[in-house]
Structures are given as C-alpha cells and as structure tokens.
Length: 295
Length: 254
Image (tube, rainbow over all chains, first blue to last red; front, side):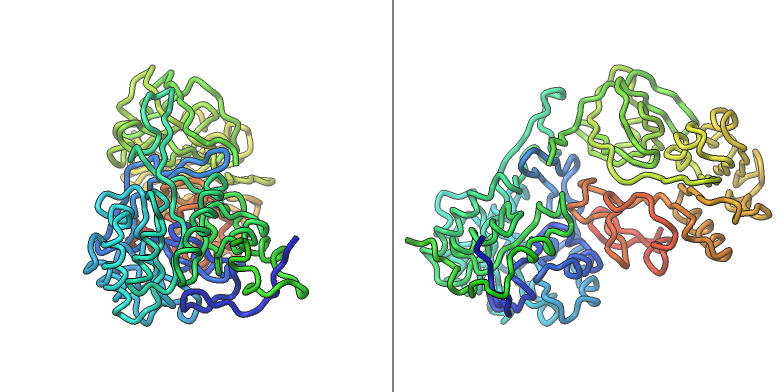
C-alpha cells in the first residue's frame, strides 16, 4: 500500500499533528471529549457547531446506525457562548471551532468569540437538517461568499464546510474562495431519510437527516476531485473515511488532510489505527500524493 | 456496523408500581446485562434512554413529556426500541446494592438472578419504594424513606452505617446523583471506592457513542458507551456529584 512520510502538516492556515482530523459534530460537545480524541491520536479536532443562541436540537430519534452508515438529525444542539469556557484547557492544541449562523453577521459574531482561542473556524454552511441554517445558506454561492468574507475579516483562518446537496459543489467552493476561505471542507452529510415500516412514519424526529459513513465515501471523493480542479485553496476531505487506504484515496483526489467522524462509532481508536498504517519512514511526501489522480 | 433502526415493540402489560413509576412489559425478550439501557422511541414525541428492569420490561418514572406519555400508554401500544446499549453492572463475590427511587430498576435483574446479598432501598415516602415485594424474596432488603413512613427515617446511604462494607466485593449503586455522591463519599472514606459501581445518568441523544452529548469531565468518558456504569475510582475529581449538561450542552447543577 502507498504510505506517507511523517512530517509537519499544515492545512488551511492550521498546524496539525498529523493528517487526520476529528470531524465536526462528533464527540465535540465538551473540551474534555475533544482532549480525549486528541490524546487518542487525532492530528486536530473540530468542535460541535456553535451558534448564536443556545439550542437543544431536534426531538429524537436523532440518530440511527445502519449497515454502511449513520443517519442523523441532531439539529445543531449547542451551548452557544458558554462553549468558550470548554476550550480553556485546550489552549495551544490544534482545535478548530465549527460555527453556524443564520446570516453573515451571526457567523461573524459567533466566530469572534473564538478569535485568539482556537486555531481556526470552520463555517457550517452545509448541515442538511436545520431550517434557516447550514445548507439553507450554503446552497447559495452568494451567501457562502458573504458569510465567508464576514468571518475572514476577523483575521482567523476560515475553513468552509460544503454541502454535497447541490447541483454544482464547485460554485460554492469558488464562492468560499472568493470570500477569503483558507480551506474547503468537503463534504457534510447527504440529505436522507428512513421510514419505520412498523410505525409507518419516518424514523428521525426531524423526518429528514444527513447520511454519513462508509456509504458516502464515493460521493465525498467525487466532490473533493471536482473542487481540486476548480479551486486553488487546500481541500480537507470528509465523508466515510475509515481506513488508511481511504485517506490515500482522498488525498489522491486532492485532499491536503482528511476528517473522520462516523468511524469513531465502531472504533474510538480509529485515529491511532489509521496513523499506524498510514505513515512509514520510507513513505512518500504528501505533496507528491495530493491531487496525483488528476489525469 | 449492524442495522440499529428502532425495533417496533408492543406493550403487553402496564404495571403501576408506585404513584409516579410505571413498568411497561413488552412482547419480546432482550438479551442484556443488568444495568444496560435502551433508547425508547415515543413516536411523535421524543426518544429517551431507559434502563431495562428485566429482559422484557422498562420501568419509567414520570419526569418530563416523553416519560409522562410513556406512562400513559395502554396495552397494545407500540414503541420503538434501540439497544440494549452500554456496559451494565459486573457483580463479583458478595454484593451490596444501594438504590434510590427508580434507581432500583436496573438493579432488579441483578437481585432476581441471585447476585445481590444485601439490597438497600430508599425513596421519599413508603408508597414510592419500588419492587419491595420482589426484592424481599431474593435478597436481604433494608429500606429508608425521607419522611419516615417506612423503614429507616432518613437517607438510603445511612443504612450503610454499621455494616461491614469491606465484606462486600461489589457495591452496585443507582439513584439520584446526590444520593450516589453520598455513597461514593462513604466508600472513599473506607478506602474502597474502586469496589463501587455507579450507574450514571446524563442527557443522551445518540446512545451509541457518537454525538458526545453525554461526555463527562474530566476524561471525556461517554456515559452511553463507556458506561453507564463506572467504577468509583473513575469518578474522582470530575463533574460527578457537581454538574451535568442539558440538551444544549450548558452546565447545570445536579
């Protein structure tokens, strides 16, 4: 198998311990849980999405595990500005705060709470199940650009997490780049649903949710590949990554680093496990791999 | 990953245990370790974690909208169940159980299996003492009530005084966190906190260790996946007995 030469990793203005980052929304509710994931080998962590007001999220069921994936509609639960205190013990660690809002002004307000307290912010312009937030804005390139610019003006590295639930993801990637994004994160979950045949109603409390995990990996690879062709800022791959081979494939599509989320369900030590297989003293420099599949 | 969609489950019997606590018996039997929990879907309302009281039942205390709705269900009603999840209790050797209120529910199966030598049961008042008759048949039962209407007048933890706690290899504890904290304090004073097994409650959304809503300080342990039962020596110096987080993740006192 292709392996990587270990060495310093920098993605979108953020220094990481390795190429593997905890994806937003997974185990990111408290500082202690983020610290735990870092101690278990993550090269960086992204927090739960934080918004302008405290939010309890959707009624349950909020998440179901399926063969090949996880379907969730959490509804962006978060403690809002109280989350700033969670980061106190994580000073100096590679933490990126996921931020959401309903307008460019709200994005800037929330991101401003974390200026100087996190290495960067990741704009959630892609959650598929929160009315007025996430993909509701992120499907419109003009709003993607405006939200990105409002936060980029704060001087913090800005990553923009994109939704695959659009006809052309590159239009949103280009808009984010124009707005001053330092990296694109592709992709958020794919809008989906399941129905309980016994109950004759949707399983999720919110009816619709987002699909993650193994089954969306090919969609994520395609999106990274398309964005690499259309944009010049780094791309962070996300979606169904669960092995070292997946990481290599995502990097060959154009990813500078990758995020891992659903795979922690079956293996909390997934970061250590993948890093153990991914790096080798006689591995290739990552610069030679990123985007090499563009033929 | 295996398919973990909620299994539609029919309620075959409703037992009013106390004025505020109801047992719902199902049409199927689950293989489980006592102390494990299930995510119970009340269609159109919410999904809530509930301990299994036996392989065919949950025992529910009315504390909010979803549990109120659950307790009002009749025979033939359908609920969805995911699970069982979590680790459960591991009684070894001579075992003492200490329960407060509905905390007796996850400990009932341990007692019915003959794993509990002594069972200390507390409640606010006599009519709220849960499973007394069934427990008396399989353990040495001692009770306490806050108002003195049955058993010892005071806290269930008071019943530990004068007992040879060192004679028990496992001390299983479930109940309100303040009550568990008092038991924890007693075990720590005796230098045997590691023999305690405490069943924690935290706000849960996913139940399978992904969302992070039930993570505890200081180690980031997930109550749903790493617990809900934790040995006492893992609860030192953290949020246990002090605070928990609500549905939004904001801290609140326990």
